[in-house]
Image 1 (tube, rainbow, N blue to C red):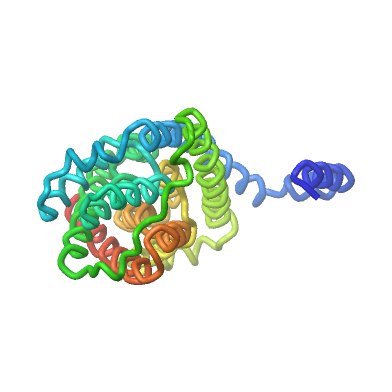
Image 2 (image 1 turned 135 degrees about the vertical axis):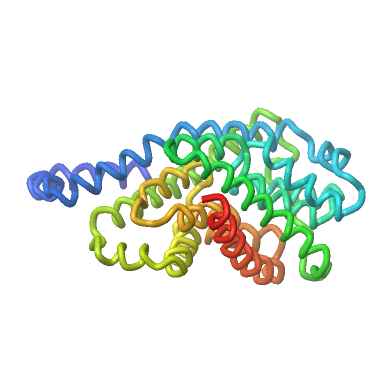
Length: 313
């Protein structure tokens, strides 16, 4: 039983039941669902592919020692510099965790590495450009996302420097691509990120389409009409959907029932803490770290994004 056989069985089953399948797809609710799903995927896919290629190139061809030399020696100063460095280094959260682990292995202060881990997926050029394309009528969303994400990243870095303990942070394991040729490491990283990020994009697009087409409008209106509840609802949704940061703006843009502040919370929380990121943090830095870092990041991201939205949106 392999993937080719499963695909063959699926196609044969679809062929045998093509009549009922056509009837189901012709229903108005399915037409609406498919329209939203295809629109989200088609809009997000170019940014996802470009982001994966650039993040793989940076992870493979830029040595981690470069960041260690470029950052200030004092952790309090290294945190904002590392956070701001995320603005020029494209990549999604799937790539930021291994890069942050490599930085810690090469001697970068953990507080600075964690600030980079949170900022890079949220404020890099690919993500900000995708946000501008997804919200053409609201250019202030780009600024709000940049400001809120950078504030959260720096605040979490300083918080870890102040309260973090060395025994909470397990030394990251050696990268699976170290010791291989650069070409093999590059394409291995691309395949890994495309499979993971692409899968999460499809799941996120399906969830957005389902919310748009299936959930009763009055339910969404009741949630979206409450300023606090709408922010919390989209924050939790961002954690559960685990969408790649290069694609989440298009999903957020489709949730038109919610306010811009609530959708900003979705965009700030998602790249910093979701289910896949929690699992990756456990695997890279240890469970003791993730169980403390993830909840603190979630609370701070919700508060900062809500305040930023109230000021800028």
